[in-house]
Image 1 (spheres, chains in turn purple, orange):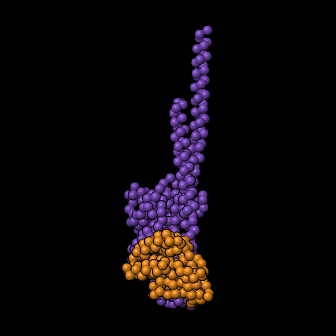
Image 2 (cartoon, chains in turn orange, yellow):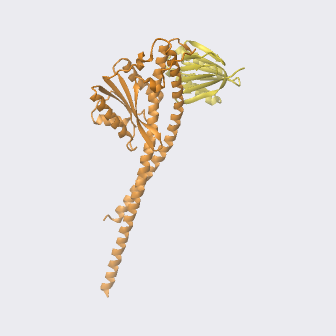
Image 3 (cartoon, rainbow over the protein chains, first blue to last red):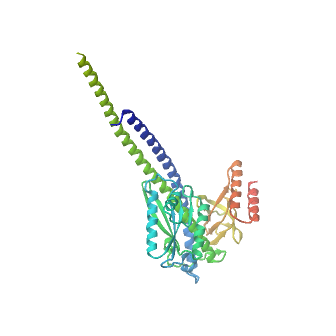
Length: 296
Length: 126
C-alpha cells in the first residue's frame, strides 16, 4: 500500500495534468472556430472559381480542342510514377489524427507498388515527416510549419513544383491525402486525385451550350490553363485549412477525453487515499487501546 | 445612372460585395472600365489597382496581385489571389497602402507596374 503522502502527491500531479488538458481543449475549440470561419470564407472562392472554369470549359467545347487533350486533364491509365501529397499536423496530442493519415498513405503506397508504379512522397506537416524519416523512407519534398498556419502563397509555391513535374511528365498522377473536418466530433480521411483533373469533379458536363462569352486574352487554352493552375493551388490550400480544422476538432476530443480520464483517476485516487487514512487511524487507535489495556 | 453588382473574392474571403456605378480593372490586355450592362466577358487581371466608383460617388481603390474577372450584364465578379482594400480613416489608409505596396511587390512584376499602381492609390487617397 502506497503511503498517504505518495497518494497525495499523485493526486496533485494528475490534477495538474487535468488543468493542462482542459486548457488545451479550450485553446483548440477557440482555434477551431477561427479555422471554421476561414474554411467558410474560402468555400465562396472555390464556388466562384468552379463557376468560371465551367463557363470557359463550355465555351471551349465549341471549338475543336477537347478538354482531355489539355495537359492538366490528360488521364493516363496505369501511371508509372505517382506522387502522393499528404497533410499531417505539426503537433501531436490529437488522438489518431496523424496516424490515420499515415496509415492511409501507407496503404496507397502498397497499392501503387502492387500496380508496379513508383511512389514519390511529398509531405506537409512535421508529424508525417518525422514518421517517414524514422522509418527511413525517402520523401521527395517535405515542408513543416505550413499545416499549422496555412498560407496561400506558400502552399501555391509548394504545389507549383508538383504541377510542373506533372506537366514535364515526371509523374503521371498526383494524389492528395488529408484528414478532413466533418463536424465537431467527426473527421474523415480524404483522398483526392489532384492531377490529372477529373472533369466530373469540377462539375463539367458533356453538355455544350454556346455562349457569347468574350475572352481576353482571346485564347481559350491560356485562360483555362491559368484557371486550372489556380484551381490546383486552391485545392491544396483548402486541404490545408480542412486538415487544420480537423486537427483542432480531433485535439479537442482527445483533450476532452484526457480531462475526463484525469477526473476519474483523481476520484479513484481520492478513494484509496481515504481508505489509507482510515486504515492509519484504525491502526493508531488499536495501538492506543492496547497500550491502555496493558497498563491496567 | 444604373448600378450593377460588384464582387471581389479572394481565398481569404469576400472583400467587396456591393452595388457600384463603375469599376476600372487592370486587364492583362489593358485597363478597362465597366459600366452596368457591359457585354459578357472573361479576362485575366494583371497586378494593379481596381478602382471602384461607388453609388455614393466615392472612389475606392483595391490593390490586387493577379486574378480573373467575369463580367456580365448585371454582375461583375473578380476572383483574385490577394487583395488589399484602401478605405477607412487616415490611419487605416496609411497602413493599407503599406500593405498594398507589399502585395504588389510580392507579385513579381516590373517596377513600372508597381509604380503606376502606387501612384494611382495615392491619387485616390488625396
